[in-house]
Amino acid sequence: MSRRALLSVYDKEGLETFAQGLSDLGFELVASDGTAAHLEERGLAVTRVEELTEAPELLDGRVKTLHPRIHAAILARRDRPDDLATLEREGIEPFELVCVNFYPFASAVEGNGAREEDAVEMIDVGGPAMRRAAAKNFAHVAPVCEPWRYASVLEELRAAGSLSATTRRGLAAEAFAATASYEASIAAWFADRQSFPQTLIAAFDKVLELAHGENPHQRAAYYAEVGARRHLLSMVDRLHGRELSLGNLSDLSAGRLLLREFTVPACALVKHANPCGVAVAATVEEAFERALACDPVSAYGMVCVVNRPVTAALGARLAKRFVDVLFAPAYEEGALDALRARESTRILVDNERRQFSTSEKDYRRVLGGLLVQDRDWGSEERESMEVVCGSISETVWGELLFAWRVCKHVTSNAIVIASGLTTVGIGAGQTSRVDAVRIAVEKACAHGHELEGAVLASDAFFPFPDGPQLALDAGVCAVIQPGGSKRDADVVAAVERAGAAMVFTGRRHFRH
Image (cartoon, rainbow, N blue to C red; front, side):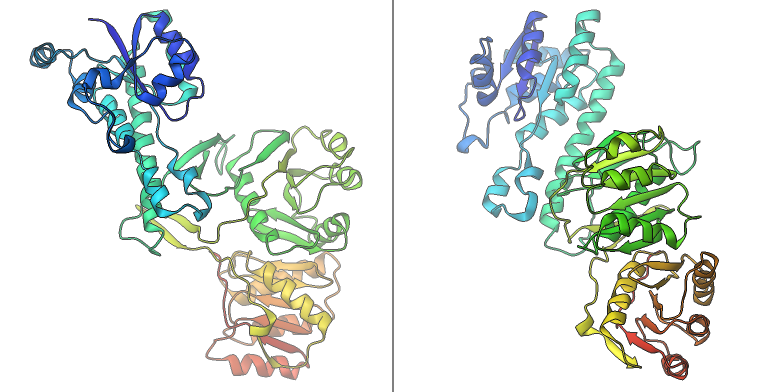
């Protein structure tokens, strides 16, 4: 029995070398028209699929390989005499290896700009059918589908003459995962017209093996959602430092989402997915200094995210701190020299310029299931807010809006005290809102921040006046919160008695 390989690929990266290697090993190459033309142009001898099927491609290429002579050659079991007898009777030679990859549906519909009729034509039918057939019959057939696999497959074939059962099983697992991922991207495109489809199918591709999980004894990896326009590490390069950990990426995500709120120079310092210092300023250097001053103790081992290039001066300043991860859109000359002096600092540069997709869902794993919700993208504008007591100057309005935007990114119960467009006290993740206020006030005082004239933001309403009262007693002059408590009148009265102002936004921003 001759050795035969079936080749039908859209992505032709590395194909010529792979096909030549198979030919040198004695494989007859059988290929669909497009793949055959590509190989013939490069001097390789190829048998076209239609020569086997004795039928031309039909319906503008929709039907190419959907034929019994193709699928019988893939699915025949070599250890079943009746299967072999069927092949002999029908004059069919079996395939030992099948190399298939699909039309790039996900990239074709990226950005939601594709016409529906064009998107539908990028749905591959024959490719997944062949790939699944080869994977099902992995005991006898090798489904080799990804260009990065070609070299190792050729190496094993040259060394051992055939692929081991372990290798074929591994290739089958990859093939089924790939077809499932492909179908998931198509299902997601159809389901995009529904907010929450009856069956949710999401697929994720591994981007990176991580140094460790939340703790050193836990293994971890980072996966990106198939079809996502951009993701946490898309177009991000690591210029220096150790491998990233799960905690690094969790903090990085929190910081990047927070800085999305600001277009002016801004800096966010993040620990355990919570900001420990945020500031906006005229320059990125000033923004960093102010953010660091908020809570320099908590900032030890921080993830630092800035939205402007790191200058040489800022690089030198950062090099004196224990920075776990530094994330910036660029690094000016001289900045990296100083930063690289610290071996452990992970230096990341962001080359991504595509916009966030506001249709992205937020997934949270729970025991045996998944919680799915819309991401909390929006921020309320001043025009939609209500001043329920006191008067507010333009300067204080700016402080309130800054604190409100930061507060949305702090774990609930969340309290942010700000002054000078800088956080000066943050209370995060408390089960009691009054405790969150107390912590924010105590942190601010511990680090020498003057609270007279500061403002306070709360991610949800105050159920009692005791929380605002702690801040008012410390000097806070204005409070911004959603409102909606049964005791709103009591809370407003307490603020009024203190001669302070309060704004209701009408919308809360819990982050659990």
